[in-house]
Image (cartoon, rainbow, N blue to C red; front, side):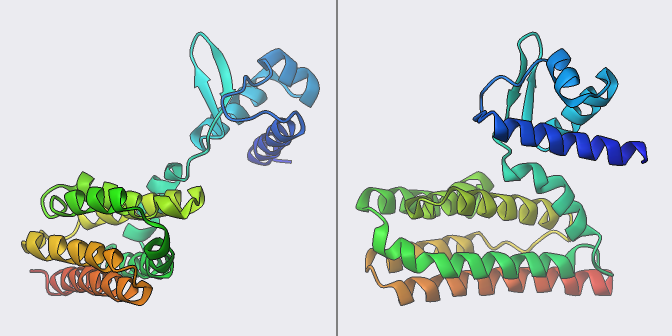
Length: 230
């Protein structure tokens, strides 16, 4: 068996041990000597496996304190997903970026109807304030989309939306400089908030579709510029 296979198998066994012992995020992982004894592995092999799990966010190494069970946030996938998107097209990143936008649209349009029924007036006010800043402030845009779905109570959804948002903006920044679209971005976000205020699920879905129509148009424009070398 090759060394990479051994390291991967040892990672799986450490994850199994975490589950078997009921260790929650933040709990202390067994010490290195104990892992060596329980897994029948060398010190170097255990260290290699733990480092690999650290890269995935499954464990967290706190120097001088020990190794702890991590939260394994999906954002650890950002570098690999961004690499995938940027290398899957003849016009670098454009085709795969369009695919990513399509996935985001399916998710967000599908969820926004639920939001219309559950969102609070206070959250609508906060969303409106964020929407007004989204044209100039990318972090306001990120916060808008995160806050939008908090009322769904689905942590996986929130992490996926943040993952896709982060990858989209990382790759978009590598494309040709975009035209000024600040006013349109703000208008799209305010239209979503306005639809949510009516508690009309279909109106909210339509507002979200219009928002993604604009996003797809920006990606297509970047593709045209890349194709012509402009």
